[in-house]
Image (cartoon, rainbow over all chains, first blue to last red; front, side):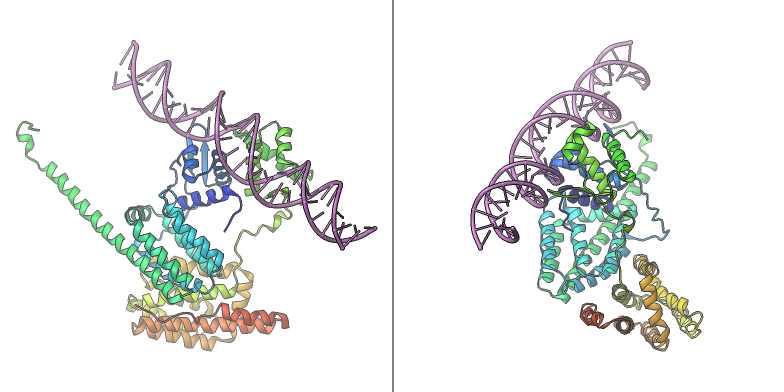
Length: 246
Length: 246
DNA sequence: TTTTTAGAATTGGCTTTGCCAATTACCTAG
DNA sequence: CTAGGTAATTGGCAAAGCCAATTCTAAAAA
């Protein structure tokens, strides 16, 4: 978890952003110089991280052009269609129990690392990867690798589906203060070693998220109707009968 | 062959030297500065090559000490080690919640199919597949494909590890009557649409299973092992599971 | 003589600065 | 509107320097 060398941390963060769908397959990463500034490290360090990602097969570097996320090599096409709602509900159940379990097994080091993610989350650039880090630390703190595998599997689902990426992106951007608040609540419960409080806080976190998803989906449906309406408005317009008057 | 980036050529050369035995496993490579001079490149380039080799698992870097050829490449254990205890605990958590969820969404057809698995389980030959069928039907009944994916993933883990296969085999054979009983209890709770009862019944099922695993492991173990086991009994206990709170 | 320890040398970790080459974007000329 | 050339962007690589961890060495203490 605490990789000594600096570039490993960058690798971790960028990989999270890829898995989360912030950097979708085929997209271009920010230029090295920009990444260096974002993460507060030098360009050579960024280069090291990029090379590590390249060896891992996550990105591809094109000289003079940019760094590109490699196309989805994992044919995760389990032809099972999973909505953002289902995923969120599943995460609530699994991660809720994980939090409860972790409350009795989490170490001081992990609590410190958890707290660090709260700090990182203030920064716009690393907010998303800090989010993933937060949930992953808790899963690891259960001392149960099977649970960790399950949680990671659910994270992969998030990045595998275009709709889910969009849905989460829309929701997360507009509610980061609440997310901070909820993460803090979860952290506090874990710090107090209160299993029930941790579970409840985690459930609350996802409850808010799923409600935000509903709102967003509603808004999108409304916009769809509006679009169709204006389309029809154009199609059935009688304006062509008169000279333009704009 | 013609890797355009410079560091790839260095990677290639060094890897050859390792494979040929010029740099035997465990030995230390020349310092970065020296390598840089040898290959006529700058130190950052050497660092990039070393990092690529590190990600590939060929070398290991120790700060202030040197770069070492990794000992046993065959001992590449990328997979997390998961014990039967961990797996069972994880299943208890996930499938417990799945059962609670399914209680409100399960259809009459699924209940009938579930009942059929109880019948099939009487037959020695089809007991195992009926068991799996039983748990999968419940997962599907949640109407949440993400949960289904998670449960299936855990089931895959079961087959992936030799130790887990053995542990489960030993336990299942000797306690099929109890398993029948527990499955029936879960079925009844689902039939009654009682979410809390379903969760509790599922937990009880796994609780008995995990205890049976401990007993089996205890029986097999030496005196020294027995001490550790009772230590673990606390760690993997399901006692922290609280009653539902919805 | 043996052990301890302090400091010097070695070695990786990371930054800064700078320039080159490939690619891309843009803008002007035809 | 297209074509071609130029400027900006972006990755590739080098050089020099400082810091921190480790190791080596040799002097000091037991």
